[in-house]
Image: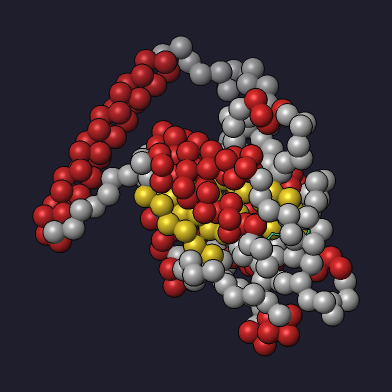
Length: 282
Ligand SMILES: Cc1cc2nc3c(=O)[nH]c(=O)nc-3n(C[C@H](O)[C@H](O)[C@H](O)COP(=O)(O)O)c2cc1C
């Protein structure tokens, strides 16, 4: 603390902050004993898993568990709608990408995968007046099921962009995680994103940036795809959504544009790539 106060921890040059030369040996010993502890913890877990399997007759998976959590917006196009910008979403762009992310995770064979929607925030009455389409059949991740988040190793969140940021339903979902934030239950787990915007330049990257603050507060580690999808990412031949921040699609101003082959392949790639990263942390 005194070292911090004297130099704010930025220079590392004062006597107080320079570790004595004997520390290296001590550090080595500590690392070795940590490794031993980890080994014995791993074997204890393996023993417990085997015991549980014997008792329950159910096979307990040792694979990392990944949840795909997406928001299917339920605003649909209506002829009498006053604002043209509300032309969207009957087509389920995010749902389509979610299915391909799942496919990628499943193809990897190295993860257990579950797909969830976030809870709706609008009342049935309002949705009816808006002419909202029915929700997909995937289960809704309600507050009562938040233990699923605690037991998972990673999350892949998918959401349509609203005014350059995540949609309200997804934000409400993040806001409902306060009790897990308080206990630090999600610290150190991994998270990625995928997106849908109406247009190019409509804010896929600003959506990622603003969503990263949710991850930071929850202690989640952001896994961007970088340029791992390959050289096609540099191609300007045809318009495509997605970036190093994750896959994405352009729904078009009237929502009628369908995800392209590139976009669905990139979504599948996210699943496969995430599987390799989560495996490393498992
Ligand atoms: C209120 C509202 C705000 C929106 N804001 C944006 C925006 O900032 N940028 C953009 O490109 N598209 C925007 N859109 C379009 C949606 O992102 C697009 O329709 C959606 O990604 C389609 O995906 P879905 O079919 O899965 O809902 C907006 C749509 C609504 C209804």
